[in-house]
Length: 216
Image (cartoon, rainbow, N blue to C red):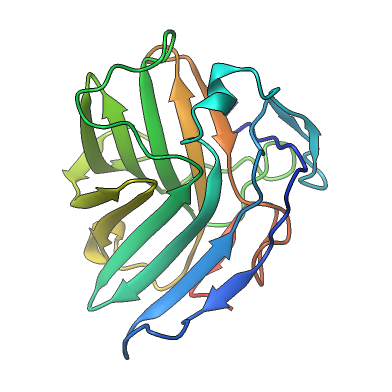
């Protein structure tokens, strides 16, 4: 299964800022808020609503850095910046992962149209990823269909916030696309679980979990 997303309806903050105050001229930006406590294994594919979630006692929930508080995408001077804030600081480089965790991922998919496992199970075009593996961080752009890593990407981590930059040319200078954020834990190279993504109805023009770019 490509994406599995679930959530605990504890504190819901759903909102959107389009080109907020302080963003310089020539920058297009969208910031989307995400509810807390929404990690888990099962959703309603038709509505996008949560039907089952991980309890607070699991290691997945306790670490905090899988729980998205907000995410953003901005564009300026032919460069995109994907940002995310999570509920706890990301692991410091060199720190071992909890038992059973093989790798961690904070990412966004770039899609040609909105994805839904049941109703529109299309392939993504690209994945933009920040990965913590073997005590190090790596960021890269990946061809979704082939899995090929196309290029390493510059990134920054500041406590619970992260940013990854990629150029317009690296995604074929697409004039428009759909994007979807996610946090992922890997038990092995092949075994993984998608944990948190877009809340239903969080952004203007959103279809299922995908958000249109440019923002509406």
